[in-house]
Image 1 (cartoon, rainbow, N blue to C red):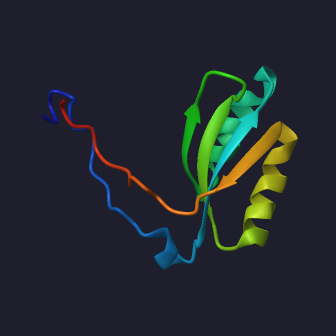
Image 2 (image 1 turned 90 degrees about the vertical axis):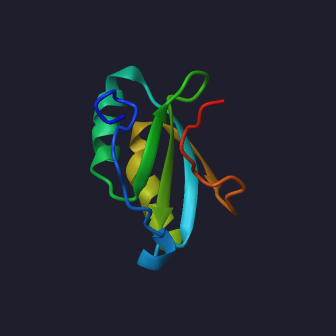
Image 3 (image 1 turned 180 degrees about the vertical axis):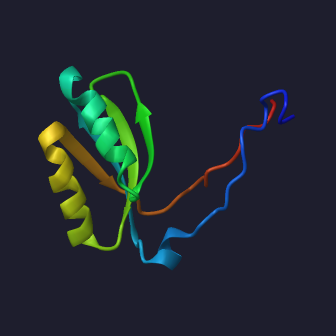
Amino acid sequence: MEEAGIIRGYHADIDPEALGYIIKAVIAITTQHPYKHKFIDVLRAMPQVLECLHVTGADSCLFTVVAKNMADLEQILASLNKYGETRTSIVMSSQIPRRGVQRF
């Protein structure tokens, strides 16, 4: 399945809380096109960013971050606000944990 490209890789499932990241948030941002590439480069360099999705609609991107506390989250947002307007949702719990794709 690896040779067929079905399995793309393997990873360890690390518990963010075990590393001190007690807050998880989903952030939406609307950014202007000239700043998108720089913004994505900034996100790539941030270890707190777990995932970034380029989406349709009013938002340019949705991304997930972890933070050690609210002050840490505030600092993350402050460093990104120059790239556009953000909207932040704090994750209270995960009703369906991340899972792999299955045939249906």
